[in-house]
Image (cartoon, rainbow, N blue to C red; front, side, top):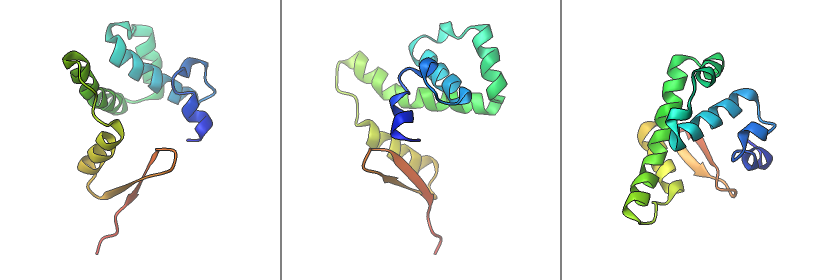
Length: 115
């Protein structure tokens, strides 16, 4: 993703991102903010771009990374450092990957060399 792509994430419906990415971002936002708003027609559109396993994966990751923020909001405390949470979680889920942070704060994963 480019810096331009990243800047469009907050308003995917008006972005120039590929349709599949727009739908994924809109789904994640609805899932987190108002899951009841995922209409049948929106879900049908989602299914045109993603299979069942991919939809489950979108749900899992959107909700997994939102949980700490929900807890923090409910308890009126600061949310954990999201970058460290994401990088630590990726390493736990995919132990064969190394996560490197670039200057813009993005992560890049690469397979670890097996010795």
